[in-house]
Image 1 (spheres, rainbow, N blue to C red):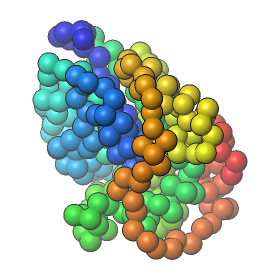
Image 2: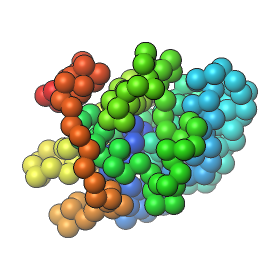
Image 3: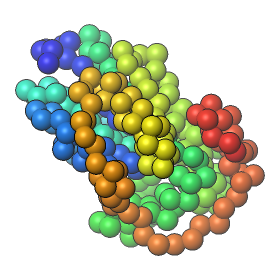
Length: 252
């Protein structure tokens, strides 16, 4: 592991929980000597204040200092550190650091499926009843699309998908290593595709790939979403997410 300012920064980023909790468990199980954290504190505060900064222009200094303290606390320890964090979309501009190699795994999921899941799931059990009522508790496109308040929850989720993925993708030019990995490739039935996706994740993060990965490990559900139905709108998916979704190989 490189010491000091040259130590790589490792992130797994996504527009929301797109297999990210599974990845935390995977790295914990197969990578001895590596520290991995999913949404480490104060991630939720960074989400809230980052959204506020982006929407209003306020508290830029506060957000920058909080992000810097978070980075020092988490990424400058004695062990390699992998941060798996879908809450960082509003502050992706603060992740690249001079003299620090940046390694980013960008997890994506088909926008319609993601929007249905996120509208149903909303948040973990602890915050699910509150998340719709707390300002800036979800990622917000900045500037917000015209007529934002009149959009359906599904349409708003699609805009969040497009905005978050575009922000993460913008890190490619600053990253030493950057890779897009589709959730469908990891959790699909094609074993060869799954193995390639897992290999890509580990290569990008500079980790030795897992040996003897159990099929049962891949199929076990982690933090499943609650039941519920969300109205689908394929036209909205095409209108809001079409170009970016097709760039990731989705047929919309």
